Image (cartoon, rainbow, N blue to C red; front, side, top):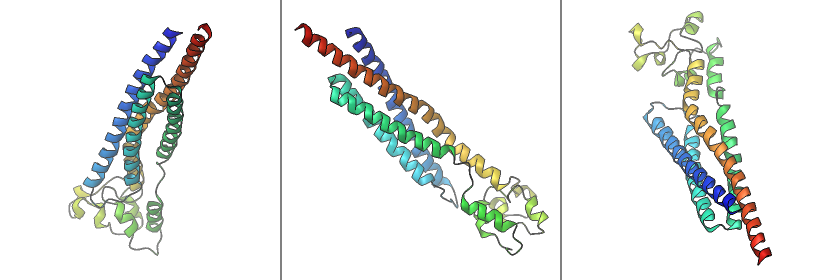
Length: 225
């Protein structure tokens, strides 16, 4: 019984270490996202500021939870260990919700959809909504969208808004470009989540087993004494 308890303590120590490292990665990801946003010109916020702040806060909470679990492990206090297991389950649910939201972010924002609708609307000669996004793309599928509609290419479709040079024209459509942009931003978060969620699950299970092992060991000591 003592060997089982000691083994579980070693396992939880390793899990807590991995958990703390995952928290540091979350903080790094949130800071990187904020920094990349600050470097963008004409940035249109689609929740990146909120997402980066939530990642930083979640990373801090994860590190604090890891420290709390280590303290509970050293003291072998059943109440602290149970609280730690419950905290891991709550964080697991929060993390899973954030992962699900991030996985569904490949859908286009309403403002971009409106820009596409205005592009094909003959009543709309100026498409200021789509022009906001056309800082690294042009049209919905390609610049040919404007040619098919017999419209002049907006300056936003060209690098540095200079369309006198054909080489400055953005050849990628905004729909595919935006999806690639979102996937590139969320890929790192998905990777961290794939490590974090199983770690939280294994940590909560190992903590419950440890609590049960400690209780059985103390019951045996009281019985024989």
